[in-house]
Length: 108
Image (cartoon, rainbow, N blue to C red; front, side, top):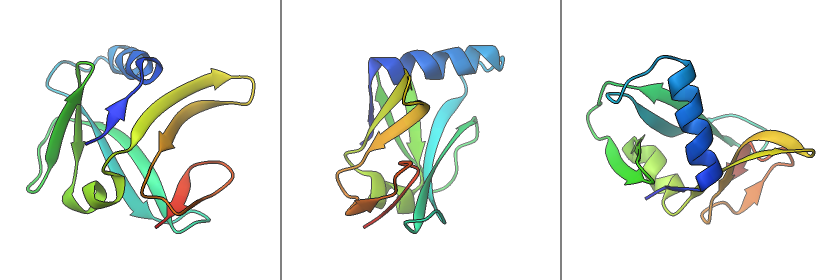
């Protein structure tokens, strides 16, 4: 399961509204190879379910993960920061043994 903070929820809703997306869309969270630590996080909006998708809901946001990504991201919290030290989504992943300085990639 992935959880989201209130700040992340507010930003996701603003992005969906700004893009004209309706309630059939959900947040797809995934992991792909790359980045300085070996694996990178990826966020997209989608409205098509794929075989093997795992669905969760937190704070009214529907979240989808493919099975491979679920294995890497179980227990992760998604946050959003808009402070002076940077702006963007942050992943707090208990499965990551190492993360890069920018927080966009990790290894297990």
